[in-house]
Each structure stands twice: as C-alpha cells, then as structure tokens.
Length: 386
Image (tube, rainbow, N blue to C red):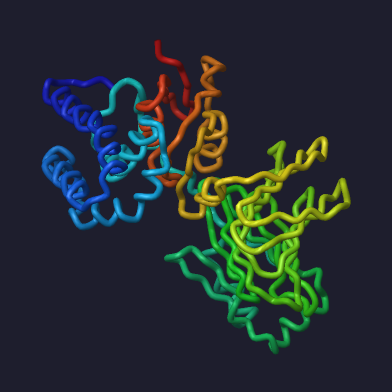
C-alpha cells in the first residue's frame, strides 16, 4: 500500500518511532516490577492517543492488561517476540494505521463465515440458530448465542425420550464446526467441550449408565465432569483417550500426519488402535502418534501453546511459518504461495489473534521477520525481503 502524501509518511514515521521503543519497554518491565514502570508505559501510550485516534482504551485497561499478561511477557526472551507482543497490544484496535509495502492490501480479510450445524440422529442437518427445532423434540436443550454454546445439561435423567435414546445407543448427534468458527458444547453429564474450526464431535443426547463415549474429528478441548462410575472415552481415527475427570486437548485432523493429545490436569490413558497398548500421560505431557507408521511419543510441553486457541489466540514458541499458515487456513478462506520455500522455516514467538483481520496478523509477522506478504484476491504470496 503506497503512502500518498507527507501526512501519511509523518504518521507512519511517528508510529515506527513508537514501535522501536518496544524493546526498551520490554527490558524495563523485566528489570523493574514497580508500578511506576507501568505508569510510564501507560503515559507513553496516552500521549499517542491523537495518532491512534480509533483506540478507545483507558489507562486503567492498559494497566490491567499489563498485570494479567506480565508472566507471558517475562518468559519470552527474544526481542522479536517482545516486539510482537507489544504490537499485539496496540494494533488490533486500529483499522486505519498506514501499513507499508511489506503487506500489500486490497481488502479486509476476516475469518470465514460458515454455518455451525447439528446433524440429528435421523440424519437431518440443521443450522445451530435453529436449535429450537431440537428443543421442541427434547426438553432441556438450550443455546447461548452470546457465548456460542449449546447445552444438553438440563435434560432430565428421567426423560422418557432420553431413556429411549440410551437403549437405542446408536442415535447420536454430530456438532459440525466449519472453517473460521469455533463453538462450545455442554454434554448431558456437565462435561464442557470447546470445538475448533473444521472439526466435529459426535455425542449422545444422554450417556449410558456405565460409560460416556464421544467421537472427535479435528480438534477439541475437554473439561470432563468427574464420575468414577462412568469413564469418559474420546475416540479418534487412530486412538482412544480414557479418563474419569480431567482437562485435555485432542488434535486429530484427517490431513495431519501426527495426531496429539495434550494433558492440562488429571490423568488419561491412551490406547492406540495399531499398537493395542495403553499409555498413561501426566499433566504437562503430550502424546503424539504418526498416522502412517503408528510411532508414538510422549514429551513435556507448554500446554498453553496447544490450548490457547479456545481463547481465540495462537501462542507461538519457535513455531515455523508453514505451521502457522496451516492453522490460519482453518480460519480464513485464503491460499498461500511461497515464492521462496525457505520462508516456510522462519520461526516465530509471541501471540497472534485468531479472529482478527488477517492483514493485521500478516503485518505483525512481517515486522519481526524478513518476510513480506502480497495479497492478490484470495491468494497470499509469501516472499523473503532482500
């Protein structure tokens, strides 16, 4: 995007001067934990309010952001990551910041706007907004549009329809999440499930009296209600996860070479379909399995990297660009082309919003790397700058 006049250039230079202070501010934060450092940063921000004219954020909000994110800021060691985090603080609220030619702009690129649907046991597929159709058939199903959650928790255990479903057992619903969306599901036992884009969860209206079984294609995070008498089992195409009560993430997309289960709390047993053996993992560990060879591995991980998506953000820790793009393509209707294949291996640290204008995300990535992005319709060309 070319700069058309001296005013644009002056604004851009002023903005860059402010951004260049990011590393100094970061160093101050980790050297001095006193409130006056936060106040200095807040004052620095307020003085630029005339430039960031569309930012309506109070000093109190900024101080709050610093307090709740201090741990995340302090653990990141590279100046590039620190700069990315500071960019993230200011740019998501601004729609008219001049952007240089590192990202060529044609139009805003927002997350894909597909429809979340439910496939009923009859095979009928209805949009989530028509949940009243389900409510009419089964008392107790509710929809929270604000928090994007459908719940079966209030279904009465003595409901005649529920008992019939238990006996038939084959009649299950499937919640389908399209590209660009995520959704939450509360099962009849109180277990909550966050479902990522391009994913589905198959589940019964009410669980049987001896076990609770669901199936996942794609990615989902589970906060399982504890019930010692009924183990909770998550089935994927390559393995099963068996728990009583715990929090964990399952990622098993059909186009992924490796599937993974990441444990946040509690304990789980994982049974591989190929090896027919049980593997136990502890909190902070991740189980992975290669879909072709069946090779399995268990390692220690930062669980937030694999679960941050439930808050519509992506935490990066030495993540190569090709992995970032794969995740972004589950949210946006775009394709990427690499003019230089080595660009795929560029590594990034920081935090990226998953529901932001894609232009903003690409600009942030370009500012902390040697990359540029050219947008031509729905195609994004990735180049290395000289």
